[in-house]
Structure formats: C-alpha cells, structure tokens
Image: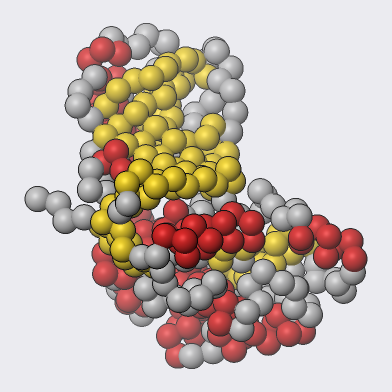
Length: 343
C-alpha cells in the first residue's frame, strides 16, 4: 500500500506492529442471534497464532465430519488474537467434548445450536484493537491526524491482504486470463485481486484529485452499511446533507461485464484511470470470467474510533469497520507501519 496516495498529507510516523499476537486483536461482530435449535453447532472461538482455515480443519477432525461441514463468516489473521464464529454440521446433534478443542491456539468462548449453516460474509463487521510500537513521529500531529480520520473518514482501500505476498496475485491473475490453468480456490482469489486492483486505481485517482469524499457530476451512490446503490442523479441539498452525515458515499467500480453506471465527470475519471494496457487486460479477463459490474463505497468512516498513548513510543488504536474493509487502510493514512520480524 506504500504506492497509494495519502488523503491527508505527508506520512507522520514510522512504527512496527504485531510484536506479539496481542498487539493485533480482532473481534467479529455477529450479524444475527443464534436460533438455539437446529443441527449446526455455532461456536465462538478465540484463536491465537492460528489461521482460520487451520482452525476449521481442526474442528472437522474434532467433530469427525468432512471439512465442508465446517463453515465461517470470514478469515482472520494468523499473527493475531482474534474472535470469530464457526459452524459445524452435526445432523445427530451430538457434539464431542468441547474441552478436547482447548489448546494454546484455540479457546471456545461459547456454543449454541443454530438452524442454518454459517454463510461467508455473515457478520456485521469487525472490531480492532491495534498497538503500534517503536513509534517515531510528532505526537501532536499524529493525534490530529487520528481526529481528522475519526471525523472525516478515509479512502476505502482494498488492503494488501487482497494482493498476496509481494503483490503477486495481480500478475498471477494476468497469467490466468492469458490461459494458465488454476485451481478453483486460486481462481476465486485471483478474480478478487484483479477487481480490487482496478478499484484501487480509481480510488487513487480520486484521492490525487481531492474528490474521494465529494460528489462528482454523474456520481453513483452507495448506502452506508449496505451494497445498495442509486443514481446517478443531480446533486441537491438533500444528497449533500446525506453525504455530510455519512448516510451515503461516492462509489467506484467493481469491474465486470456491462456498462459503467456512472456518467459525466465520474465516468470520465473512471475510464481514464483504467485505460492502460494492464488495466485493459484485467478488465477483459473479469468480463470473460462472467463477473458483472458492481459498485463499492470510496469512503470509509471507522466507528467508535479512539486512541491512547500507552508509552511515549507505543500507540493503541481501537475502532470498528464494516465487512470487507481493512484496518491497513487506517494505518496507511498515518505513515509507515511494518510488521515485526518473527523467528
């Protein structure tokens, strides 16, 4: 993300993160209450130093079911302490001893029955508690930048997780579009990376032009907290008020087949940002893969954002983000935050 522009001026700090897993804590915000009945055991699990897929495999072994019988709403970081839900399909409603799951990596916080399998994306968002260490930078300026982010929001970048190690997912997507065969799970990941790269290009152009959080002629709007879109329609006082109160956000394209919904200046900017040879190859590949045009909000406002200095060089941040939004977008607006080296 270091190549992406900044919305609020020059970087203010250098810091490290994930010195220990506890410095990166994520709690899933559930999207629904469990029904209390059914044949799917819903588990709330805190994991430390383990990735979501590994925990799902452990649950399948514990329950004696196929891996496809275990589901989760979203993947969480490995080098972190995270809380998330899993569902395990147990048609006979007989669960093995939960104590058998306990380890240094897995702790079961709660369990209950539910009448449906946990679907991907079935979460209301994520709450983060991050600790930056070895912070170098002027404290007053950092405080002010964080207050600005809390009040104004920030660009809704797709984070570096989408693009793989050293950003290799986009080149791999181009190879796939050129005819290289990929496994189904790889294909899905690479399609997402290609779409995300094109969205970030449009957002970068709007950040550079200072219009990522204001209306352009021909703007398409996204309702806050949903995927519902409307417009374009002429700007008026009612839309301006909704924009100011974060009820709606300007949007950018998630590429696929079909015409861009934007018009006027918004359309011109999107077309210009996606006109080079690589962008054209990604666009064609996504269209031929059968994806359809969709939209994503260009602006993000973290909820309940707070910060505190634990020491002169240790800064704690806490905030909540909607599904599909990245904590790295917040860190990007502060400066250079790199992961601590691990053995």
